[in-house]
Structure formats: structure tokens, C-alpha cells
Length: 143
Image (tube, rainbow, N blue to C red; front, top):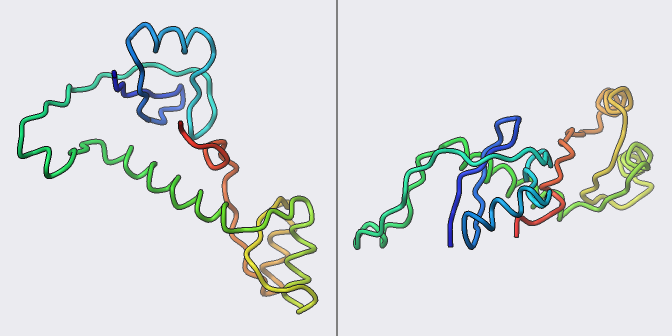
């Protein structure tokens, strides 16, 4: 098993696990590799140091030197939890948020789409909304 550090054209870093170098090249040329953050198909292999199994360091767990990659992973994990726990009301987001605020609909976590202007109106009415990015990685697992 080969573990490669990969990055898309926008600089989002992530790992890819492949059976071999040829497997990586075949998946890339076949259009099967996509960035888990932005869904870009322009993925390249980055320089990486080999991981050596030296006994007791294995018990401590792997050491990740790339802080940005860890932050991306933590961010995606938190965002997936939010997405999974909220009901997708789609285009009805503004209407449903107002209904919940006025007690016409049961309060629950919801998500959906609205314009920036309508989101501002909701906030001015005292309805708390938080814009979330629409990332492909939130809808798909990385396996």
C-alpha cells in the first residue's frame, strides 16, 4: 500500500492510498481523483517523507507534521457532523427558519439554501443563521 500526499490546483492537501504508483497514475489519468475539499480533478502528488516504523514510536501513534492538513481534516469532520445532524429543507430555508422563530414549526437544526440578502434579513429579525460552505467533501466520504 502506498500513501501519497496529494494536493489540488488550489493547494488543498490530502492523502491518497494506492496499491502502487501505477494505480495512482491510472486513477489520475482516468479522472477518478478529486479533491475532497473543492472537488477539483486537477490533483498532483506532493513531496513527502517516508514513514518509518521504529518500534516504540508506533505506540505513540503517527506524528503528523502538516498542521494545515490536520486542520482541514478536523474542519471537514465537524462540518460533516453539522450537515448530518440538520434537516435539509433546501430552497425553503428562509421560510422554515421564520416559521420556527415564530413557533409555527418545531425547532430543530435545519440547513438549506438562501441568498445573502435573505440571510441578512433573517439576522436583522433576530433569527440566528450561519452560512456554511457547500463543499463536495461534506456529502461524500473519502473512501
